[in-house]
Length: 179
Image (tube, rainbow, N blue to C red; front, top):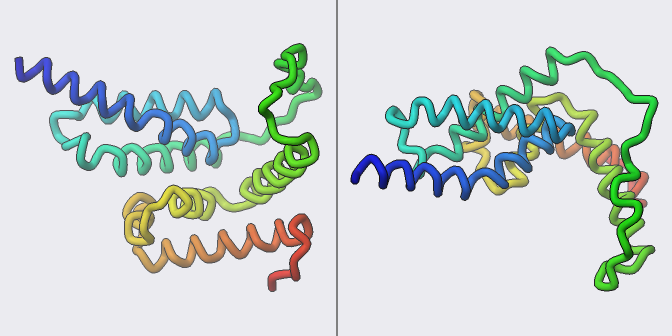
């Protein structure tokens, strides 16, 4: 009975953390297939050692740390590639959603999202991870733990990442240039 309850607890933990873990990996890797692979691999590694960890309590931090490290490893080892074909016509035949936002607001939102994605892509992997983790609501100390650095170094990574983002987004947002 206890083994079944433990399995149910782990299933519930995976279901509760999967959307956040996948979103985080996708924000770091910018490729849904790579992100899904990294998340699945990290879950497999954690669940294989579930008897050593209290996953419902500490699992999310461990998982996000593993995703961060795996993403950094994957991006530093992968050579950049590009495609000559476009895959953005998926769903082109879908009817418009009557509850969707106005086209001009949607266009502005899409432009901002594209500008933010481009700005995030320019950050070094560890800075991007620090900014993303902070945006997910983790404290500077927790970000440092997850990145394997001190809290003050995590603060530096967050600060420099935010400065770089502000510099890249200033022309888009129409503000004064950040030095």
